[in-house]
Structures are given as structure tokens and as C-alpha cells.
Image (cartoon, rainbow, N blue to C red; front, side, top):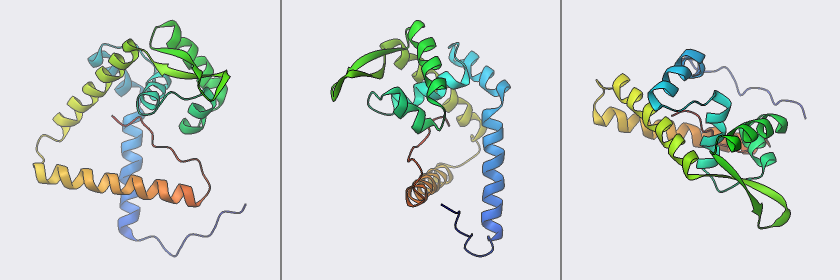
Length: 170
């Protein structure tokens, strides 16, 4: 299916938002930042493992293929990461109640604790970075971010793309 043409010329505000999001994405995905976050959290996880744990923590147990679709990665990547997380005791496989032949991936208590530590470390860093912002500014930013994510997801649904909210920002 061909990509529909863009609706007119983007406004300067949309261009600025796209640039800011690109900067945030770059900063949040840097290996050095990830290593620092894991050190603060005291959890030895790579970026793929953190993304997978976040997704599992934010949903009911899912099949590996569903996890891959939500994360936008190949199923083989999820399979390898799940195997590593299972060996480390962070996830377990449970029978799929809809199909006993299939399995779903579920957090263990250790996995829940690990992702809670990662999130807490991320929130502490964000709190320090935004310490000069007023509570009203923080509420406004949070409201607008949620609205933007909801609009992005609605647009993705219209385009027939898989709907997922990543997880991976805090």
C-alpha cells in the first residue's frame, strides 16, 4: 500500500517538536546513559532486556510473537532475550490459557523488582533534570505528552500499523 502524501507543509512548531523528539530519542538510547541508569538501579540488564521487561510489566503475560510485534523487533530477538531473562530469573513461561500448546511470558517477582528499580532510577534522573520546573509546568508537559502519544497511537491505528506503547522511556 503506497504511503499517503503529507497533508501540506509542516508548521514550524511541528518541525521543532520533531527535532526535540529526535534529540530526546538519541539521548535516551545512548549506551552510556543506559549503563549509568543500570548502575544507579543496580540491575545488570542490556537495553533489549529492559525494553522487554518494561513491555511485560505494562501488560498481561504475552506470547513471544506478541511481544515482538509490540516492540517492533524480530521474534528471534525476543526469543533470545527471553531465554537470557529466564536464566537470570526475571521471567518465566506460563501456559497460554487460550491454547495450552502455546506459552506466555510473565514477570517473576525478581523481574518485577528489577524493572521497578530501573524505573525508579529513571524517575530520579528525570526529577533532577526537571528540578527547576514548577509543578504546573510538569503537569502541563505530562498532559501534552500523554495527548501526543495517544494521537500517535491513533494515527498508527489508522495506518494499519501495530498499536503499541513502548515502554522504554522511563
